[in-house]
Length: 420
Image 1 (cartoon, rainbow, N blue to C red):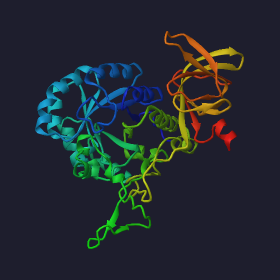
Image 2: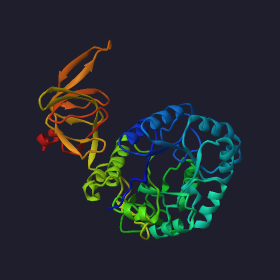
Image 3: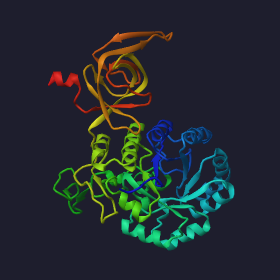
Image 4: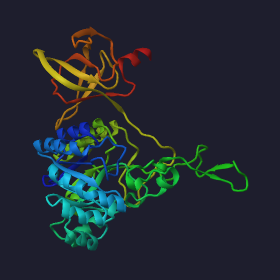
């Protein structure tokens, strides 16, 4: 069995709730962005003033924080960087993730207390490039996503031993080389290289006969067109030992546009495997959340694509988040939880708890904790929890912890069973 004790699990934090989920469910480090220069501008992200609080929270739980400053930089961007970098340096964050050479040079000058990690946007694919970045002051390179396991092992053998290697292990794949794509800017005016990608690679396409306008011909046998650039999601949970043997120091999960439920679920699964659980026992968890069909990217050859359609598969919905748990008698607990998706009296909810296997609990005595405008609580027995972000209570044979996530299998509620 591979020892992953020295390998970092790095999770995305697109906002505060994702940050808290990542840390609580076992991430050793998180990467996030302030309000500029990040490759995921559609994410909630953090204001520059919020970064110190985020760092303090993560550090309090023993996790590191890496801040992305990895968009392509114009001259105006470079001019705005010095005070921005100084503020990040003062925040106590551990590292900057940088791709632009000019930004890297300014980071050394204006953020001297932070480590410098070279973004995957820089396409580091060989030991010479890795060595050059190391000589310039980098402590880590995030290798290009086009590398195979064998390529990474060769780079590791020839690069400086002190230089850490980080590689993506899970999440969406970009069809462009190292994410440098012009499609979005050309087709929508939104630059993916500035963090505003409209994902035109996920759209359907068809051939048009030039001499007969309006005559469309599908590239594949699908009248709607074909998704010729629609890459499968990456999932390396069954191959982490290969990456560790190749010399990868940090396993990186993609997903700063994802919600906390997604982050918690993926971190929980990868943490379990890194702690010794067999991958087969957690694959169902990775199918529970929104995902495209999984593949292994470029690690063992050419990546796979989903050409028949875009869209996500998922088996479960995030039903609720536990806010309180109180024992009412031997073997029975009263659970309070915030509703995210509907669930009913008698439904079986699965419980996602940090560093524990998934457990299941039956909802009994479902009650809506209605509040008056004055804040008084009026418990009302109900057959269904369906008010998003309202608090409900129910009894359970299993104790839970505040922050636990409750999920429900799609189309498996008691109400739907009765209707069926």
